[in-house]
Image 1: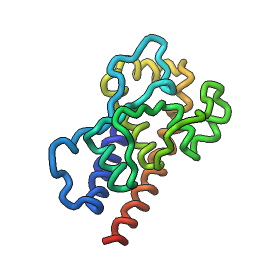
Image 2 (image 1 turned 135 degrees about the vertical axis):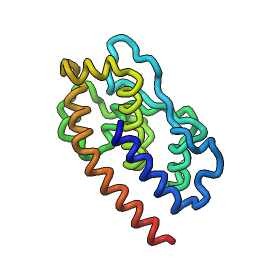
Image 3 (image 1 turned 180 degrees about the vertical axis):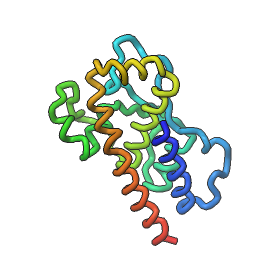
Length: 172
């Protein structure tokens, strides 16, 4: 959860390069993403999804930083997002549950991390019973995937933030 919110604060700082008046309205202060509040029985993280919203940080980042319009209501499955991350190839290649989709929206890596961390933070915050069971029992097949992702995400996100900050400074 801390990684997501720390990452989000850096993203808000970076957005100032592209929109110095940020936040112009309170609607851009929302996440811009949503996820199912109650997780269904036999829940698997890789099958979960996030859905884009019309307002909030996510659509603002998409449009201002990447000139990318992602339709409101577009759904991204966690497995589709993991497939887009080069650092996850070693474990994904051996996970029979993850089949690379034929038709998926490819998004910049920074946005991919934003969506994955958003969902993980919402689960740890609002589905604490499932999250606690996942961490302590380690019975879920999702554990190695989530652990590897969290181990690698911090360093990769730092690099992406550095690159975006330099781009912003150069364009000033």
